[in-house]
Length: 105
Length: 433
Image 1 (cartoon, helix red, strand yellow):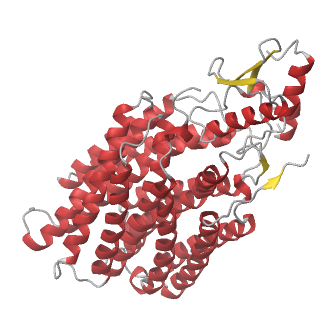
Image 2 (cartoon, chains in turn brown, yellow):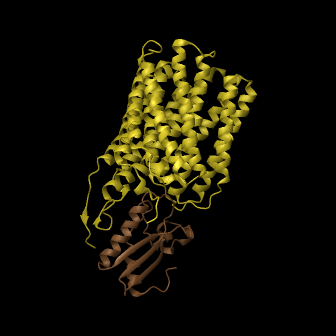
Image 3 (cartoon, chains in turn yellow, brown):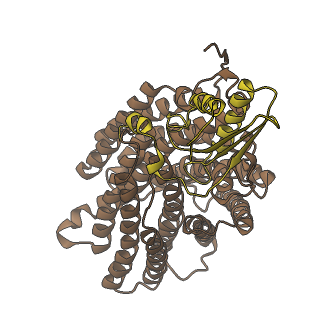
């Protein structure tokens, strides 16, 4: 899903790696929670599609707010939209090799 | 943003936090009472001091914290707002006052002599009614009709039966209108409370939280459903068997149905444990996993207690006592000690840092309490509980007193961390990288 990213989208992804999941303390990118990043330069919009590791995750709201803050700090003039989806449902297979190393998997 | 995210539904912290504070204080009080009840506990499983201590533990320590945690958790797992925060506040004050009055009269053996016992019982009854209203009306609004939620709602029903029977027993002491001995009624009251309320509730909550904290997926939910039906069926059967005093094998059969339900629950969570992503367990999860050892001990003493074997007749009082201790001070206490670290830091953290993420360098939830203190009370607890069981079977009050000191240290360290979290001051540092 995170394929063919533009340079800006890759830069956004790198910044999202600074956001930890407070429970696991692995960043949300390596945990596989980010599904899509779309950077629309013409309309000055960024759209991020993401999920959470469990429904009813007590810190879900905070993580999404964190994503918005980080992207806004990088692209202050842009309209940032963070969307939550449960499709497809997150599974441990979505964790990146770096994330698996951090979790000693 | 999608509806139903917990932070939007979470109640105001003033509903939840006082429960954690008061629960921690009741745990310290209980450890002091244990010291002074040691003489009774060395001989029997029932008596004024033991009744007083038990109600401080099950109501003041365990139920107070469970109520608080549920006000936070019900909105999370059911994806709705809590029905009423005002009812939650009233329920808290009536529960705390009622528990103090009731335990005080039990401890001093004022049963039937003063009106305080009836007032205490009535306050607890009111508290529970308000809690049940809150839980039921919240549950009616939810779209999440899961088996975990069914456990939580059903447990509230059993709690209502527990306190109803409890208050009938206190009335019966004075007016004597139920044609049954109070000891028989007490056994039913205890099983309503332990298997119906605590166990059902803990299964609902644990089956929601533990897989989430373990980050375990693809679990076989059939075991959880079987657990629900077996425990309820076994319990209903057991209540009839106890009330009509049907023969011992029927009691044993109902016990086996109930215990099978517990085994299905253990199986479900053991699968989550095996499939967990987080191999290293933090202190909260270590204590929670440890709790399950006591669930096995409860099963063991429960079976011995039902069978009432001849060659153990010199120890029948001790087996009854160990049965209660392994579930109340073992399983439930260990689970609360552990799950405090998985809930309270997050609640306080969300309150202080929710809108600061990404803007400042902030501590993580795990950094706002002392891990070392938590480790110490983990070991203190292990020493305390096993010394207590040894003291019970050795029938030695001095060993029980040693265990009470260990419990006092455990409870004080636990309270230290609880208050450290509750009084945590916001720490913001500029983002400089």
